[in-house]
Length: 114
Length: 114
Image (cartoon, rainbow over all chains, first blue to last red; front, side, top):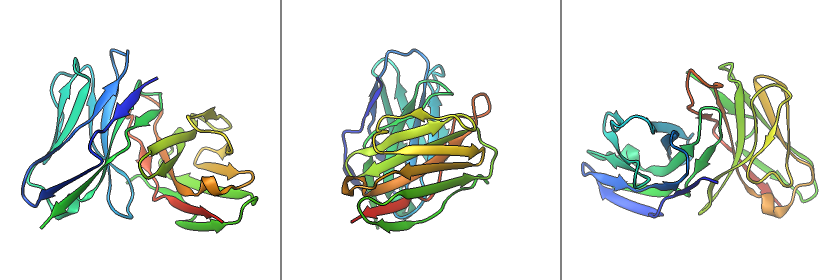
Protein backbone atom coordinates (compact mmCIF):
# COMPACT_ATOMS: atom_id res chain seq x y z
CA UNK A 1 0.00 0.00 0.00
CA UNK A 2 1.11 3.51 -0.71
CA UNK A 3 1.86 5.87 2.17
CA UNK A 4 2.37 9.62 2.21
CA UNK A 5 4.20 11.35 5.05
CA UNK A 6 4.17 15.03 5.87
CA UNK A 7 6.57 15.49 8.75
CA UNK A 8 5.66 19.10 9.57
CA UNK A 9 2.23 19.39 11.25
CA UNK A 10 2.52 23.17 11.45
CA UNK A 11 4.69 25.87 9.91
CA UNK A 12 4.72 29.63 9.86
CA UNK A 13 6.35 32.18 7.58
CA UNK A 14 6.49 35.94 7.28
CA UNK A 15 4.70 37.61 4.43
CA UNK A 16 6.88 37.91 1.29
CA UNK A 17 9.27 35.18 2.43
CA UNK A 18 9.77 31.71 0.96
CA UNK A 19 8.69 28.50 2.67
CA UNK A 20 9.11 24.83 1.78
CA UNK A 21 6.71 22.09 2.84
CA UNK A 22 8.02 18.54 2.94
CA UNK A 23 6.41 15.37 1.67
CA UNK A 24 7.76 11.86 1.28
CA UNK A 25 5.97 8.83 -0.05
CA UNK A 26 6.47 5.13 -0.37
CA UNK A 27 5.57 3.13 -3.45
CA UNK A 28 6.91 0.34 -5.62
CA UNK A 29 5.31 1.80 -8.74
CA UNK A 30 7.47 3.42 -11.42
CA UNK A 31 4.84 5.74 -12.80
CA UNK A 32 2.40 7.70 -10.70
CA UNK A 33 1.05 11.18 -9.96
CA UNK A 34 1.73 13.53 -7.08
CA UNK A 35 -0.35 16.48 -5.95
CA UNK A 36 -0.42 19.34 -3.50
CA UNK A 37 -3.88 20.44 -2.40
CA UNK A 38 -4.69 23.55 -0.39
CA UNK A 39 -7.57 23.91 2.06
CA UNK A 40 -8.03 27.50 3.28
CA UNK A 41 -9.90 28.00 6.57
CA UNK A 42 -13.59 27.13 6.10
CA UNK A 43 -13.17 26.94 2.33
CA UNK A 44 -13.04 24.25 -0.32
CA UNK A 45 -9.99 22.15 -1.04
CA UNK A 46 -8.35 23.14 -4.31
CA UNK A 47 -5.49 21.76 -6.36
CA UNK A 48 -2.26 23.75 -6.14
CA UNK A 49 0.08 21.76 -8.34
CA UNK A 50 0.54 18.31 -9.82
CA UNK A 51 3.50 16.27 -11.07
CA UNK A 52 3.67 13.14 -13.22
CA UNK A 53 6.48 10.85 -12.08
CA UNK A 54 7.70 10.18 -15.62
CA UNK A 55 8.42 13.89 -16.12
CA UNK A 56 11.85 14.93 -14.89
CA UNK A 57 11.09 18.63 -14.98
CA UNK A 58 9.70 20.04 -11.75
CA UNK A 59 6.20 21.49 -12.03
CA UNK A 60 5.67 25.22 -11.49
CA UNK A 61 2.49 27.27 -11.07
CA UNK A 62 3.22 30.96 -10.53
CA UNK A 63 4.62 31.29 -6.98
CA UNK A 64 4.30 27.56 -6.31
CA UNK A 65 6.92 25.05 -7.40
CA UNK A 66 7.89 21.53 -6.45
CA UNK A 67 11.16 19.76 -5.91
CA UNK A 68 10.51 16.22 -7.10
CA UNK A 69 13.25 13.74 -6.20
CA UNK A 70 12.06 10.40 -7.56
CA UNK A 71 14.91 8.29 -6.23
CA UNK A 72 14.49 9.75 -2.76
CA UNK A 73 10.66 9.57 -3.04
CA UNK A 74 10.44 13.19 -2.01
CA UNK A 75 7.99 15.83 -3.25
CA UNK A 76 8.35 19.19 -1.51
CA UNK A 77 6.34 22.34 -2.20
CA UNK A 78 8.02 25.73 -2.32
CA UNK A 79 5.93 28.86 -1.94
CA UNK A 80 7.72 32.04 -2.96
CA UNK A 81 6.72 35.56 -1.94
CA UNK A 82 4.24 34.20 0.62
CA UNK A 83 0.92 36.03 0.88
CA UNK A 84 -1.64 36.17 3.68
CA UNK A 85 -4.02 34.25 1.44
CA UNK A 86 -1.63 31.32 1.41
CA UNK A 87 -2.62 30.56 5.00
CA UNK A 88 -4.18 27.11 4.75
CA UNK A 89 -3.83 23.42 5.41
CA UNK A 90 -1.71 21.84 2.68
CA UNK A 91 -2.06 18.19 1.77
CA UNK A 92 0.35 16.13 -0.26
CA UNK A 93 -1.33 13.31 -2.19
CA UNK A 94 -0.30 10.31 -4.28
CA UNK A 95 -2.17 8.56 -7.09
CA UNK A 96 -0.89 5.30 -8.56
CA UNK A 97 -2.58 5.75 -11.93
CA UNK A 98 -5.22 7.91 -13.52
CA UNK A 99 -7.99 5.58 -12.50
CA UNK A 100 -6.83 4.99 -8.95
CA UNK A 101 -7.70 6.66 -5.68
CA UNK A 102 -5.77 9.44 -3.96
CA UNK A 103 -3.77 8.72 -0.83
CA UNK A 104 -3.32 11.82 1.32
CA UNK A 105 -0.76 12.83 3.89
CA UNK A 106 -1.93 14.16 7.24
CA UNK A 107 -1.43 17.76 6.23
CA UNK A 108 0.69 20.77 7.15
CA UNK A 109 -0.98 23.86 8.59
CA UNK A 110 0.79 26.89 7.13
CA UNK A 111 0.29 30.30 8.68
CA UNK A 112 1.53 33.40 6.88
CA UNK A 113 2.14 36.24 9.31
CA UNK A 114 1.97 39.94 8.36
CA UNK B 1 -15.92 26.08 -13.48
CA UNK B 2 -16.43 22.69 -11.96
CA UNK B 3 -18.96 22.75 -9.20
CA UNK B 4 -19.32 20.12 -6.52
CA UNK B 5 -22.03 20.79 -3.98
CA UNK B 6 -22.95 19.04 -0.76
CA UNK B 7 -26.43 19.11 0.71
CA UNK B 8 -25.50 20.55 4.10
CA UNK B 9 -22.56 22.47 5.56
CA UNK B 10 -23.46 21.52 9.13
CA UNK B 11 -25.52 18.62 10.41
CA UNK B 12 -26.36 17.44 13.91
CA UNK B 13 -27.82 13.96 14.40
CA UNK B 14 -28.48 11.61 17.29
CA UNK B 15 -26.89 8.24 17.87
CA UNK B 16 -28.73 5.53 15.97
CA UNK B 17 -30.26 7.81 13.36
CA UNK B 18 -29.94 7.05 9.66
CA UNK B 19 -28.03 9.87 7.98
CA UNK B 20 -27.87 10.78 4.31
CA UNK B 21 -25.14 13.03 2.92
CA UNK B 22 -25.69 14.11 -0.65
CA UNK B 23 -23.15 15.24 -3.23
CA UNK B 24 -23.87 16.61 -6.69
CA UNK B 25 -21.43 17.58 -9.45
CA UNK B 26 -22.25 19.43 -12.63
CA UNK B 27 -19.30 18.51 -14.88
CA UNK B 28 -20.36 15.07 -16.10
CA UNK B 29 -17.56 13.45 -14.11
CA UNK B 30 -17.50 9.66 -14.04
CA UNK B 31 -15.61 9.32 -10.76
CA UNK B 32 -16.96 10.37 -7.39
CA UNK B 33 -15.45 9.97 -3.93
CA UNK B 34 -16.35 10.30 -0.26
CA UNK B 35 -13.67 11.15 2.31
CA UNK B 36 -13.71 11.91 5.97
CA UNK B 37 -11.29 14.44 7.39
CA UNK B 38 -10.16 14.34 11.01
CA UNK B 39 -7.48 16.49 12.70
CA UNK B 40 -4.11 14.77 12.63
CA UNK B 41 -5.36 12.02 10.34
CA UNK B 42 -5.73 13.88 7.05
CA UNK B 43 -8.28 12.64 4.52
CA UNK B 44 -9.29 9.02 4.46
CA UNK B 45 -11.26 7.47 1.62
CA UNK B 46 -14.56 5.88 2.59
CA UNK B 47 -16.05 4.83 -0.76
CA UNK B 48 -15.71 5.72 -4.40
CA UNK B 49 -17.56 5.12 -7.63
CA UNK B 50 -16.41 4.97 -11.25
CA UNK B 51 -19.84 4.82 -12.80
CA UNK B 52 -23.53 4.78 -12.09
CA UNK B 53 -24.52 1.94 -9.76
CA UNK B 54 -20.84 1.13 -9.24
CA UNK B 55 -19.12 1.37 -5.88
CA UNK B 56 -15.79 0.40 -4.43
CA UNK B 57 -14.70 0.31 -0.80
CA UNK B 58 -12.03 2.73 0.25
CA UNK B 59 -9.83 2.54 3.30
CA UNK B 60 -12.49 2.96 5.99
CA UNK B 61 -15.88 1.71 4.70
CA UNK B 62 -17.12 0.20 7.96
CA UNK B 63 -20.33 1.79 9.17
CA UNK B 64 -21.02 3.46 5.82
CA UNK B 65 -22.74 2.65 2.56
CA UNK B 66 -23.18 4.59 -0.68
CA UNK B 67 -25.61 4.98 -3.52
CA UNK B 68 -25.12 6.22 -7.04
CA UNK B 69 -28.32 6.05 -9.04
CA UNK B 70 -27.45 8.98 -11.32
CA UNK B 71 -24.12 10.04 -12.73
CA UNK B 72 -24.13 13.45 -11.08
CA UNK B 73 -25.17 12.34 -7.60
CA UNK B 74 -23.32 10.27 -5.01
CA UNK B 75 -24.85 9.68 -1.59
CA UNK B 76 -23.13 8.59 1.60
CA UNK B 77 -25.32 6.76 4.10
CA UNK B 78 -24.70 6.18 7.77
CA UNK B 79 -27.11 3.36 8.57
CA UNK B 80 -26.95 3.91 12.33
CA UNK B 81 -24.93 6.96 13.26
CA UNK B 82 -22.45 6.68 16.12
CA UNK B 83 -20.47 9.32 17.98
CA UNK B 84 -17.21 8.16 16.40
CA UNK B 85 -18.62 9.20 13.04
CA UNK B 86 -18.54 12.84 14.10
CA UNK B 87 -16.28 14.33 11.45
CA UNK B 88 -15.93 16.51 8.36
CA UNK B 89 -17.10 14.70 5.23
CA UNK B 90 -15.76 15.74 1.85
CA UNK B 91 -17.07 14.73 -1.54
CA UNK B 92 -14.94 14.90 -4.69
CA UNK B 93 -15.29 14.13 -8.38
CA UNK B 94 -13.02 13.68 -11.40
CA UNK B 95 -13.01 12.54 -15.01
CA UNK B 96 -12.28 8.91 -15.74
CA UNK B 97 -8.82 8.75 -17.22
CA UNK B 98 -7.22 10.49 -20.17
CA UNK B 99 -8.43 14.05 -19.82
CA UNK B 100 -7.42 14.81 -16.28
CA UNK B 101 -6.86 13.13 -12.95
CA UNK B 102 -7.52 16.19 -10.81
CA UNK B 103 -10.15 15.73 -8.13
CA UNK B 104 -12.53 18.61 -7.44
CA UNK B 105 -13.86 18.90 -3.92
CA UNK B 106 -17.11 20.06 -2.42
CA UNK B 107 -17.24 22.45 0.57
CA UNK B 108 -17.67 19.66 3.09
CA UNK B 109 -20.33 18.66 5.62
CA UNK B 110 -19.45 18.90 9.29
CA UNK B 111 -21.44 16.15 10.97
CA UNK B 112 -21.90 15.98 14.72
CA UNK B 113 -23.43 12.86 16.22
CA UNK B 114 -24.70 13.31 19.77
